[in-house]
Image (cartoon, rainbow, N blue to C red):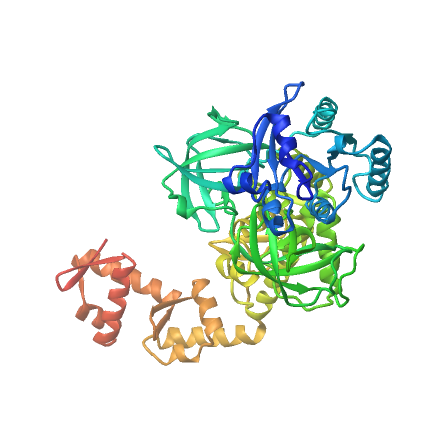
Length: 617
């Protein structure tokens, strides 16, 4: 199924042509019929001789309704540029042509209507004029089909050209991320809210959950129609009508975006490529307000120039747009901007949630140029360089690429050692740049070396502290640590260190510790000892089991502590238990120290208190 759209100047026969192609009058409103002029989007469909089904979007041609035209032509496969033989190229012919070009519509058929109103000589002159015009555009190979809407002469040739062109058109991409820009919403008695739009990027089926953006309202597909036929499932590239549940008509309107829940966020600032139309009469100024058209959505935005020089026609430029409110914009989407009923130009969205840039930053311009024209591989590398880690689904959304094609590109980049895959399943995997991995490995090594230098008596830094210091994603950090454990680091009890690192006392520290151990053994019940120790040395001796910390102010040597345990054990074996007083007398100390030590032994489950005495556990 394909979608084609009309374009052209007012009263050149667009709606009449749709009618004779499909048998459907696309003018839906009585006002349109009364005025004989299309003022809003119209819709029809027909089947080609090949069996291809075609949806037609008919757009208004009057300059006052260009915003409606813009809402209808995004995502069409083929344009029918309608030009009346008795008038030839007119102002809206040019504006519509430029809009289609800016939106990336590469296939077109020029339909020369009202041929019954001119003679053959005039018709030949008009065809030559049109071909000369097309030769200066991307549509130079487009066929020109003369046709009379009144007599239908040329209709069969047009149908054949449409069929031929669509047979050479690649089927729409299905990347598993369906979205629909709403172009109509209404309520049907007995059914509820219905919207219409063109489905792109993925298939949908009855019962699917969807999210309405930018509002973030959840809904469910109750029913699907295409060309007035019910469907259980529908593929991308199709005009659809969706019956939605749990949503009131007033909560959804033209321009809203339907997507799978949690797949699309809102963004307030975007960076974009830009092409200025030579027909725009004014110089483009920094910080002007414009209307920004994307999909069927019309927004107000502030335009910021990113280069020092003002944009000129015929050259690629880069701009930033700040919207009044956050909007569901995606990378790779095409847009058009207008001001005072004149089309200024358009381009492609390159970056979302953009920061405020300094104007004239060459590095920024180079980055945006790479995002615009780089290969898929280069875009993946660029995105990873900026974000460090991405899931497979994030790539699909960010780069707008087919599922199978993305796998092929990633596999090639893995072979070229450009990126690393964390995990085995593509749907659950995350990816990081190989170069980024090397940089982070070096950062981890440097952090550990500096830590060992600053704290030579510690076994290492805790994994959590190292992760926070480096600002690393949990999964990337775990991956890097596991990778490095096979090479040059060790992890013991949650402490990470270089493999060849051994915490040890220097000569001065060793002499101090030797003297203090001797003092502690001679005079163990002395609270002044702990105050003489440096915090790092004390922790080292505790970790190395050279000292035992009874409480915050009381330490003993491991040798003395073992002597306490042996003496208590012998006493209890003979006397069945030991009291605080008996401990005091046994070690010729005070009741205070006896109680501190016995409570510590209880906490270590060496002894157990029973009444006023202790027994061995």
